[in-house]
Length: 433
Picture 1 (cartoon, rainbow, N blue to C red):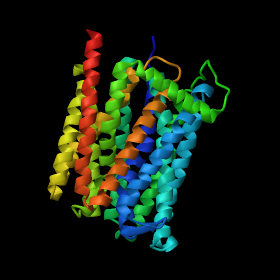
Picture 2: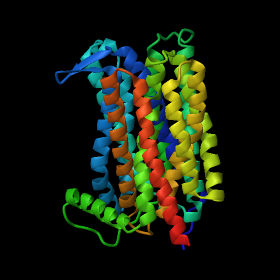
Picture 3: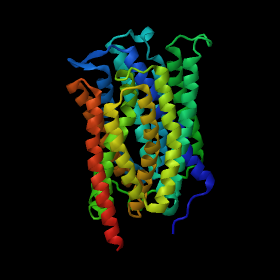
Picture 4: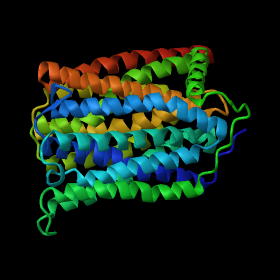
C-alpha cells in the first residue's frame, strides 16, 4: 500500500507550481501577448507569407507544443529507466527561465520595430514555452510517487492553488509597475520588460526549493539499453497499447484530448480577443486576468470537494457543459462588462478542470514504475490537443478575419469531449456493477 510523502515533500512539490505558473500567466496569457501586438507590425511577412501578428503568435505557440509533444516520450523514457527526473526538471527550468529573462531585450531600441524584432520575441517565447512544458512532464510524473491514490486530488489541487497564488502575486507586481511607471521614472515599455525579467528570476529562484526537497526518483528495474530516441517512442507505444485495455482510461483520455483543445486555447487566446475584438486597454486586460486567477483558486478547491462527493468524471462533465456555454457567450460578447463576467466564469472552471484532469488520470492509470512514461502519454495528448486548438483558432481567424468565429468553433471540441467523458462514466458504472 502506497504511503503519501511527508508534508515537507508535498509542499516542495507544490512550490514548483508557484515557481513556473508565473510564466503561463504573465508571459503566455497577459503581458507578452499585449506587448507583442503593440510592439510589432500588425502584418508580418515570414517565409514569404503575410500573417496577422496575433495569428503568427497562435502558430508559434502551436509549434512550441508540437516540439514538446515530440520530445516528451524520449525524455520521459530516459527519466524512467535511469531515474533522473530531477535532472531533467532542472534542465527545463533553466532553459525556460533564461529565455524568458531574455525577453527583457525584446525592444525596438535593440532590434528596430520590424520583422527581426518579432522573430526574436517569438524565438524567446518558443524556447521558454518548451522549457515550461518540458518541465511539467517531469513535475507531473512525481505525483503518483509522492501521493497515495486517495490523496492525489487534494495534492494536485494544492499545486494548482499554489500556482495561481504565486502567479497572481507577480502579476500584481507587474501591474503596479505598469500603473506607477511615471512615478517610478519609467517609460510605458520598461515595466513590461522588467516584468519579463522578473518572471525568469522568480521561476528559477523558487524552483530551487522544489529541487532541495523532492526525492531522487528510482530507475526502473527493466533498464533499457537500446537507442534512447527509438526507445522513447517504443515506451509511448507500449503505454498506448496498455490504455487500449483500460476502457475507462481510454474514454477519459479521448474526452480529455478534445476538451483540452478548448480549455488551453481559451487561456492562451483570451487576451488577444479582449485587445483586438473588444479593444480593451492593457490595464483592463491585466485586471481581467488577475480576476481569472483569483477565481481559479476557488474553482480548484470547489472541484476537489465536489469530486469527493459525486466522483471525478461527473464533475468534469458538469464543467465541460459550462465551457460550451462560455464559447457560445463569447461569440455574442460585446462590452467590457461582458468580458469581466465571462472571465469570472472561465476562472471558476479553468482551475478545476486542470487539477481534476491530472488527478483523474493518476487514479485511472495502472500501478507502475514507469510513471514518467504514463505522464508523458498524458502530456503528449494534452500538447497535441493544444497544437490543434491553437492552429485551428489562428487558421479560422486568418480565414474569416473574425476571432468570434474562432471562439465559437471551440464549442465543437468541447461537445466531442463531453460525449467521450460521458461514455467513460457509463463504462465506469458498468464495470463497478
